[in-house]
Length: 358
Ligand code: MRU
Image 1 (cartoon, rainbow, N blue to C red):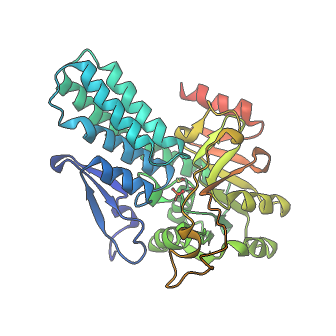
Image 2 (tube, rainbow, N blue to C red):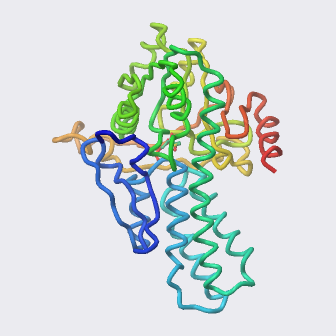
Image 3 (tube, rainbow, N blue to C red):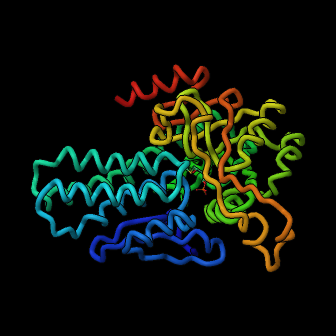
């Protein structure tokens, strides 16, 4: 990393010449920087499922590249059978994880692109799919820059900011969502003090957020999840910034497990709680958080994955490992998008955001 910026570490990119998705294996961070070259659909599916690539926008970008590669070398020359193959690739990739709406959003965008070009020869359709996938990544980077500007507008120099999980550069095309204001603040001399929740059980905060913020020279302190109340009570936190996997039409927000608890604590201590959400993460077709499917993951992640020996008896104990929770809209001070900050009542302001987008 010497003389290199954290932004030189690309989360995911397409190596078109070699028909591969190249991604930084996030399960190995912070100890090892290793890029994987994925060429088959099962490899791509596994990388999303096992969180080698993770974070809602990065999952979307990977799926878009995956959908393109899934049909790139098709020998079919008729649209209908080509479309059948595309749909099966899409369905397969969409089954990797259920909560982050960006996965479905990106795959839907790819399908719309394909359908809009169906009159053209297959070779040209494939070309437009390539361009659409690259545009999904480019749009994500532009979006995060804009979120950074809006986010910074609610922060003052010297503030303490708490974040949960990793909604950073590693979770996106670049810059992150919740971290975008932090990076911008760093550039502009804000001297922010970031507190990163470790984020059990998969430790995205400890392994990824501290890794990328420290590499950028940002003042970052790692705390265990159960220490958030303490740092808030001490007056060290002036705002909370988190990312999200899906925002429902009423503002209820699914994000990494533990986020809802942080929001309730912030409310208790009168600390503003902001959700950073690219409009691609806002799902107006989901009315409230109750309709968001929450991914359940393996028990091993709780008691075994990071330890030399199991940290709970393996017999006679039940385990429950939801990967996300839903923060009720009433605890959210603002939803920071690339098109502005939505504030309550979200059922109106989120609609206005989409009107702006149109
Ligand atoms: O299970 P993960 O690591 O994919 O969960 C990621 C999060 O919860 C992030 O906060 C969210 O996807 C936003 S990333 C900009």
